[in-house]
Length: 539
Image (cartoon, rainbow, N blue to C red; front, side, top):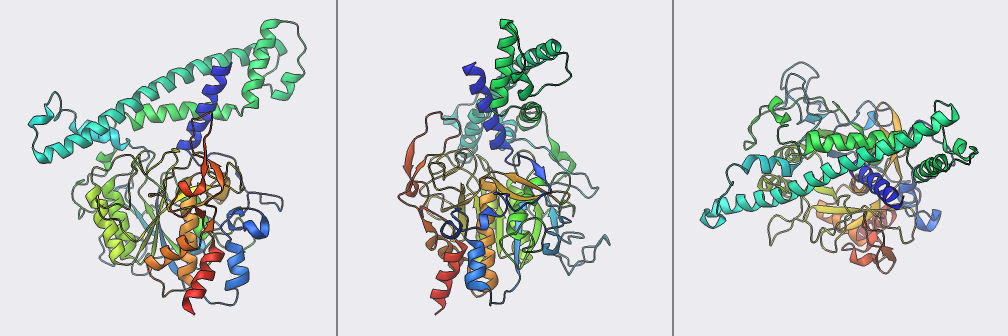
């Protein structure tokens, strides 16, 4: 039983790490909903360790005027018609809607609210993609098959290094995915055996954990089946979890790690040519949970009596669809950053990442372009429980071994309580690579079709920081992106000496450390302190 429960725990963790959008969808917001807007609350005023957004508005900004700030959300699509977001969606006024003409001559036809880099002009769109390790291994496996690395040219040595990293990670992931599939199938078989046995014994069509308690029998086999099911149900197992387990396994094997799966053909672009036009203006299709959730944290309409309160009260969101179910492509990321900069975004939120970046130069050039134009980039640290000072994640603020850009903030995830679980167990961390932490556990935000959801992830910590940055820029438009970064980091609430668990999703015995060892600031973001510091600087 111990091994079964450990496997179940690992499966549940895996599902949470891969699909941080997991939990219930609801349209009901009640006064006792502890998750509603908690990221806006204050440790001092509310004893909830949020970003002190409401406090900033109520005590420092209530008599001030704001200007509109454009924030680009590079993600997996946004429901721009959501009841709590539609008023804060960017509109390209230089483009005439749906006339089939590139009116503003920017290379994108009818880009009214942004652009979808995962589709084509026929309206076809990519849903699933390979992981980057799969794409790299597939591209170079024949070239480097049975080759002696010592015979390679300097240029091919670099390619071989990337290929070799990808090959090792690919087969590690593939073996884990196949093992997961086998274990999941065995788990399902055992669960079904126990469940069907109890249904037959009780002559019922379905049975709950409460009904299991009421079964009286002296049959040892039946008692074992009952106890097995009770342990599973008590550890969070449901039929929905089983379906997600199966879906996760299918995605990994049939799409993410499948060398014969190549969806990019529908786009038909040259992966090495930034000037090749591609994509369409459908910023939703075919799926838009993640991006909608992210955009809601930044820009859901405040104090309108419905839904949630986003962080920035005068903001417009550019929707840029780049992230599929799988790994994003470097070229798409580079194109999206440039699009955002060219269309007036002052802040770009990027809640995505991967292990290798074969076209890193394209992304680096776009990041430098954003830096040159004074645009702040906010990036999620990732959800693997890794020290990313050691385990590299892309994209990154490091352009090369000696240069880091000044317009970049990396964000880890924190929870609403100041205890050993203050830092999310899934959050990546790093004294050098992670700048600050922000709320990212049990966050309530927007889901497509005017629904609401609760989810976890550094994906949702990054937009808290993007929202605070937009708030600052809205009320203090003279600030530069480097000043905003400095203000946010220097005004963070200091928890340097607070003892917390070191993030690690798969470790049973958790290690403790001081908060200051997990990021450069050792703190969490505070809109109130950021505004206060800005006011002091302006005197």
